[in-house]
Length: 145
Figure 1 (cartoon, rainbow, N blue to C red):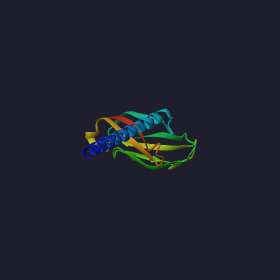
Figure 2: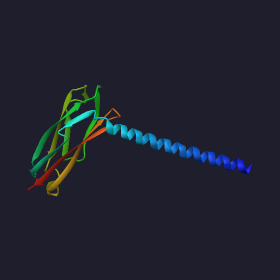
Figure 3: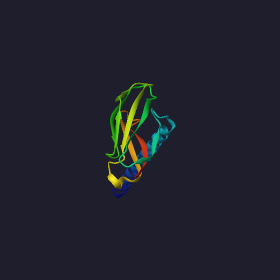
Figure 4: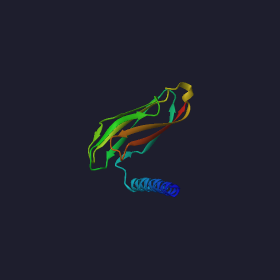
């Protein structure tokens, strides 16, 4: 009876280890698969540096999001990392091979004098397509007096 319990425990341990190993291999396989695939959405430019901006100045730039896939891509939300940065996309559905303009506005005076110096901000585009999920766009400004 005791040997049956030990044998059963050994079998359970091997099954748990095997399931963990299989799960790890599947995750690694999917990670590598995504590395080899080109992006389904192309952002141009990929980031932007406003350079030196005077305190209180509001500056704008425009990005283009191009759908490189063969399917319609739906943007669920456009958000930013800080209230001093606003982003608006011209359309939420981008057909294959079409583009959408993304207007980004940075208000250098939003934080007052505490905003002087280097400012790194992010714009996030969240997509319905789980292969894309979310794209992060970086902007930078050096706020001066």
